[in-house]
Image 1: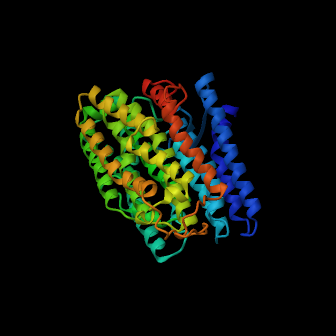
Image 2: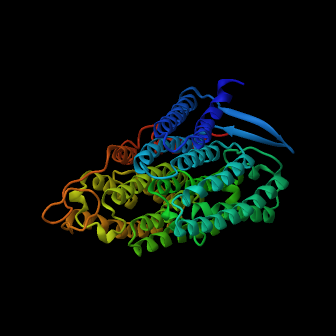
Image 3: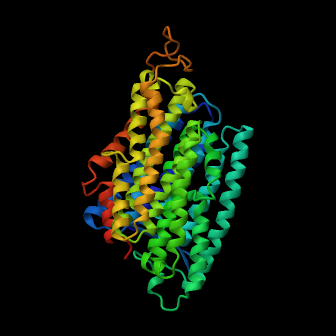
Amino acid sequence: MTMTSWLPLIVLCSSLFTGLIIFLLPEERSGWRTALNMTGATVKVVGVFVMAWGVLVQGAVYEARFTMGLGFDFVLHVDLLSLAFVSLSSNLWFLTTLYAVGYLEGSRNRSRFFGFFSLCVTASTGVALAGNLITFFIFYEFLTLVTYPLVIHQGTPQALAAGRTYLWYAMSAGALLFLGVVGLQTLAGPFDFVSGGVLGGMDDVGQWEARVIFALLICGLAVKTAFVPLHGWLPAAMVAPAPVSALLHAVAVVKAGAFGVLRVVQDVFGKDFAAQIGVLEPLAAVVAATILFGSLRALMQNELKRRLAYSTVSQVSYIALGAVVLGPLATVGGLAHLVHQGIMKVTLFFCAGIFAQSRNIHRIDQMDGLGRTMPVTMALFTIAALGMIGVPPVAGFVSKWYLAQGGIQAGQDWVVAVLVLSSLLNAAYFLPILHRAWFRPCSGNLGGPGPETASGSCGIWEAPWMLLLPTLATAFFSLAAGVFAGWEWSPLGVAELISAGRGAFP
């Protein structure tokens, strides 16, 4: 095997072996555990960078293929779409690991936590690099199994109930996805992902059979993508620690579902064939309903992490919106939002974790004057929140602009209406938080170890550097992705290359 075959395996296994070794470490070996975590994360980041350089600059093709029997191949293949997702997961794993080490310092069961944490990133990497639907399905279901222990990590009755809810949703959806994969293999035989879709080029594909298979695949992906009405597990899972919430929302579960929708629509069916058989319109209706429903539900939440969870229900569907709108610019916007949403949402959850750890703040009505006591953390939260609303020049504005332009380009003006209404709702549930934090006086009821003044715990008290530094990095990337959107290697630039068909599967 050549390096172009080995490198995808190295990138995949850097987190796999890290996780397996960490399981064997006793709890008191915190130094070894941290060193293993950061070494594995560094190897993954470097490997992904080398692959990105090879694909974007040298035109290299990275692929590892193994025969599994029954005519199926296990395939890891790097194209620009997989590169965008694996770059997001690898870089955010590095930062989230650093954050989690600081966040969980002194807590119980850290070896178990970081072991499954690494396996979760392994599953996300496998989903990103999967070269066909069989390989995708293997890692997609593996992701369910390794995220369950993270959801129930705290072991409380609430956490265990949330874990059961998550398993019921995910395993039921997995069964539907399996039926869709089997049906597709029966209909079309084994095939790799193909840019523009493989089914549209087959003359003997029946439209009704294709519609049923499309419905099974999308329903199987809808749970992790948190489409309405299959979203209920996501707010319930917010009982998990903040690093898990960040991982679920920005890197792993919901992003894997949205990535799967992109693969099915673009690389299995193809947009043209999907439009021809009439399956995009029902999916568009579900996506639009999810965008608006998630925002409306977020308005009703006083618990900060639950508000962010319902925000994710809405925001992740922007990625799917780019897949169902026929305008090429909408495709670019949806692909760019795959990365933009990740870096903005992980920033918000990092900040929520800092508020909880440093000040014991969990509810929005506890955040009065927080910008005066934790100005750096609140400034980072503000950048990401404004990006979610779509305020320029943060990354979220770029995604929404291209999605709207794509809707106009395709003559689907309803897209603009959904985006405008959604942005107004985004403002309605984020701006009151910012107003409380920056413009209301400190209530004096802030918890945590901060220095007290005559008004209570209202002195300036920022988080430890291991929590603050990753948050600073992701907030910077949220801003830079918007300011430097015209750079060829920006998330938007890569999305334009994907939409144009460069660097994709042959």
